[in-house]
Length: 105
Image (tube, rainbow, N blue to C red; front, side, top):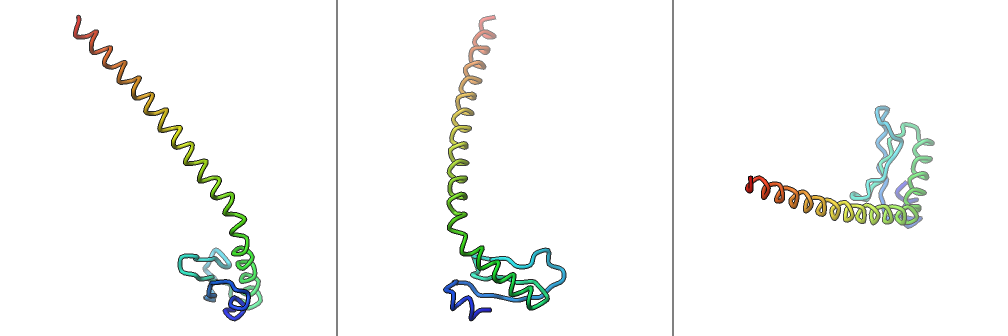
């Protein structure tokens, strides 16, 4: 498996740990540079490896969407913060006006 990854230029290492308890066939742990494969059968393990290689190759395509969503979240956070600050300013103004009226009576 690792020979195939090397020949394809995929900068990851495959680790095959067959497990009947795993909820997933395989996964990429990018931080560790590893493709973990949990399938018990060899044919299934190879199929999962190919699947993960395709996932790895498609990451740049998905990155566009992830970056766009992250920028949208940042923009919404800025808008929400601005509105909160404006609301707090109005609340403080209302409180000061109420306090001023209370002091006069």
